[in-house]
Image (tube, rainbow, N blue to C red; front, top):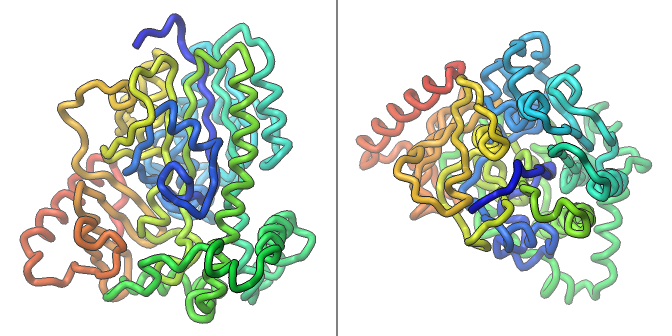
Length: 448
């Protein structure tokens, strides 16, 4: 594959979108032609995970290429702005590409560690909107001629509005009540999706149009207590798991799909503007999300847990001049670790020495790769995890059943925690050793 010049880069990401929440992934209850178009002319990474299934830590990883524990960041409320070393600020995506001659622009949701702005990371902010106006601004940017290669980040809010459905249903704390006010745009979007459901005959709606309950709807056997403890800290999460009935969970899934379609239309507008521009033939397009949503699996909504629905995310990449398009890759990849070295590779920039991710360019271009990681790290506010080709091993910080073992081959729905099975003694020993090795390599804080 030859490129006459360094490519422009269009980096689109959403908030709270699971890997399966697009029609290109085989989900027949959602229609995402915009996202699908990237998969059709590029590559879909089927086993892509986020650095941490929560907004702020994951977005820190996306922008810097480091695990959140590099600055002792674990959740949305940690305030570690003073702890971010200068070399990390100056060696994130924005400054690396800006110093290499790229025009760097950021639009949309930020939600980085408190006080950290796109400007701190080397970007010019072109829009603070997170919805339709962001799409319009990005489309205008793409329609303009540019005398240098550009790196445009478009950070859309949806389908994150789904968070407000359970918050409104079970608001208890003052914070939850503030998030449940009827004039909030998030609830207006939720209610618009619910009105669409009312256009159908009720029986027909649930028989033919509303997503069914997921196959892994029930709570995992021997689930780590850390998960219920995490939910207890947010009353609405605990109440949704305890009191939502099957019909309400299905409506929750319906709204989640409609919000995904809403953001797909905004993304489609941006992609059409690129297609109509003079930049179409030399622009690398990346689509991903900061984390997923439980989407009724194990009777949960929201994120934070290590279940696939929360930690595995979509990752679609279309590069200029790709010879093999529309294929699915199954290597273990991390959007938080691997996108920075990937973009550096395409931009002709040496990645920082302390970045542990790998460039995805050989996989994108269909080149043989002899050595790839066999275990991928993921962090959370309640523990840490490694993912291998077949297994997931998790060590939670506290509570009963701290260790969690999932065999994705025999138990893809993660219905049973097999960590206590005597027949897995040797396997657990090997996974514990791999866990220690991987997190030692990433200089992560030891949890528990």
